[in-house]
Image (cartoon, rainbow, N blue to C red; front, side, top):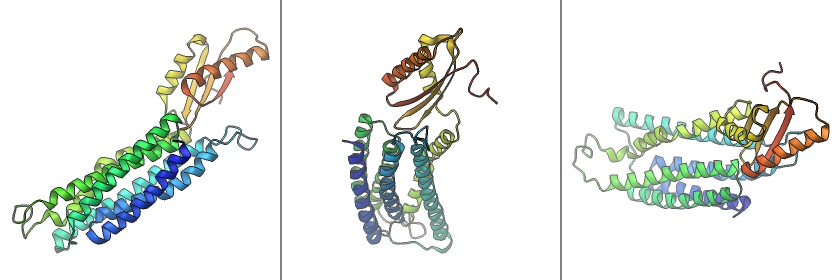
Length: 303
């Protein structure tokens, strides 16, 4: 399946899950489902943006953008992850407030655990299948956009599965136990506890992505393993490699190679060296945009 088709499938699947999620929230009263539905709705909107970003990021470099627009993919992934962190952080605050109100005032919302559990399991199955579909498309065409959608979908699937399993498990607990007594009934705050646990377990991945993508946009060395791989691929040039800087843009890799040659070489000879380096990297790394500079200085020694 192509990138475009995979994103289309994801777009309408997310809209369907958002609608089902809000319906399930209305009939169950489980706050965790409103978070899940909102997350699906954000995913629906983000896929629409993702399709446009994907096209723009792969446009041919021009006079106004001599290095292309590959950084758009990094920007998209960063913003996408920031929205995820924002949504689940708000959900965390809401869950904490609900638990405090329960212990102080005894306020709680009656939850129909069966409805909530059934929706969670159904949504999880759909989302896991969707994440597999994204992974298949990404294997055919490496893409930062598809990778971001795959991760977001997998995160949503984990949240939905945990929601469904927890609500079903809590539903079978009989009344009159130490955790289902008149003074304390865990069933009344199960969704809030679940939201808190999920946020604490899942927030690290999008937060790490934010830091990595911000680093790539601002020019930090965020892909040292990739740079090491490139140095190995250029082993034929050996000690002539002065420096290597690489940035993973998702669908392509930008590489800046600095070489130092002893003795004079003609322009055609230098162009031939450039062409050989571009060919070597493209064969192994896939779509690349390579800049080769002949100098004895490292990249950061020109100030």
